[in-house]
Length: 230
Image: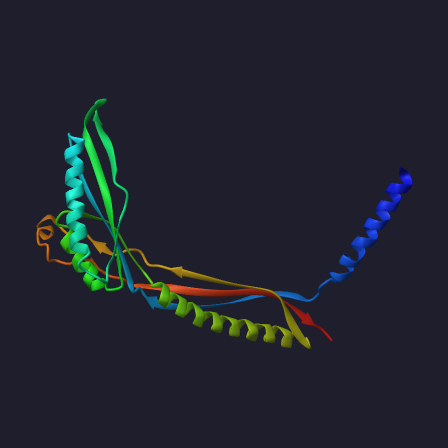
């Protein structure tokens, strides 16, 4: 058994040696990064409204919520430039002193549009029967992609420039890229929404006060270069 084991170890060592020899050690490695950013106006508005209610009878409650949602959907779908979708219908018991008092229910209406003026006016109209649950602004996919592509080009140019500066100052004859990562990030501002008062809520033609703001789109290029030293 011992000779066979010795022979196996010798063969395994010979097979492993070429692979190890191919991986030559690297020296003069430098890690660096570059970053480019641009403030872009948010061109897409997202609003979530809720149809909700509370009744003792669950069937009557469902009828009320469904009627309010049907009214809202009919109004929203009149605007071709507004994307419309609904969330799940949720219902739960309302208890007081360990006794069932009644039922509560809600369903969400989700709206999205690049025409923020139209969506603001529509949101004001919908508040006749629905309540605004959340509102946010973002950069559209098309705009974000175009900005990111432009920033990637600038960040790569900056990375190349920095690599050249490092090599020049260290008197290297050249360099090669060992690894490279490109990352993108968009920082969105907090939502600005002013709730309407009870009197204003009765005026269904009054739009919601909004401020879309800007998003800061960033591109970071990071990587490792190996300097060629004389």
